[in-house]
Length: 361
Image (cartoon, rainbow, N blue to C red; front, top):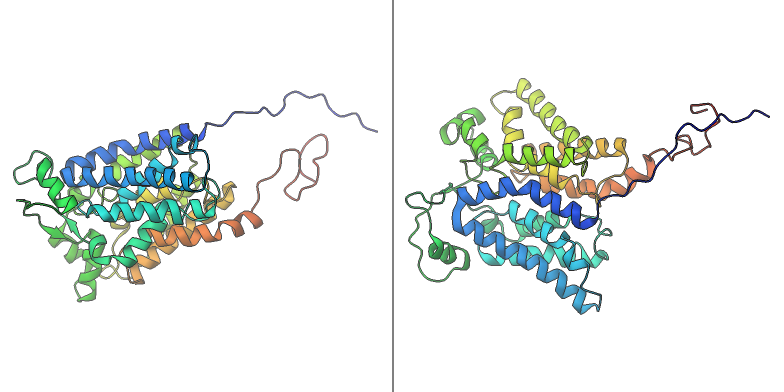
């Protein structure tokens, strides 16, 4: 019988960050893009954000109270606040207050607590709420305005912002309504106008980079969202697999079809910098609960999200497909985890014990 070699090292347990710490870090990463969105869209955006986040927290507390569960630590772990935050990032900044309240109800009650609470939901709660709102209230969910930065002439003040969000009194603000970049391009393509002509007539690349175009808070701050994503990668809250696979797939598909027909299919930069591509890749698709656990599984998940998002944007009925793509791949996550499993320490990928002296046999 051969003698096993001496142990020269071994596995060590590493305490993972708490739920509260993870949620807090994600919110810190979202803060720069959110604050810049507040500056761009002013008091109505701030009001809607506060209403949405507060409603999510109150819905969480209300369900726990109704089901006679302890309020702490659940209402203090930050998960409900983050859900409301992400939802607010996907809403039109000047949407009425009840859109945020209903969205928070859908996210917390229907998409999270019905499944058993944090860690047991199959679908991303914020994306469930966005899709329900988009299908149920398409007018309110597709009404965007050109940015009116805080302090600029014509921008709504505090009282005007309350009038816009809550619908009381008379607002003296005359905002310019507009479709988002993807919505405008899709409409013009349907009328026979090339995408490049439609884009140049209404937008410019500089506007996409600096967020001076119509859209939600999560659609107009790509560089700041990338910065926040890099922070999450550096802190090891997320891994590179899903963001790279998702954005890479969108870029490859967009580039390929743009080469095939450059008049009809927008280039990769338009798809990457507009819509919720960056927000979805770094902050939504990477949700620890609703995404696969293995590195290879994450890559498959990211590729699926990217491919579905591009297909829906290009040939579907909606100009933006990130939410639909993430929810479809959420449903596929259990299947991915079943067939793509990480290797257990001390065993081969087939589950057999490793032999002394080295590799898999």
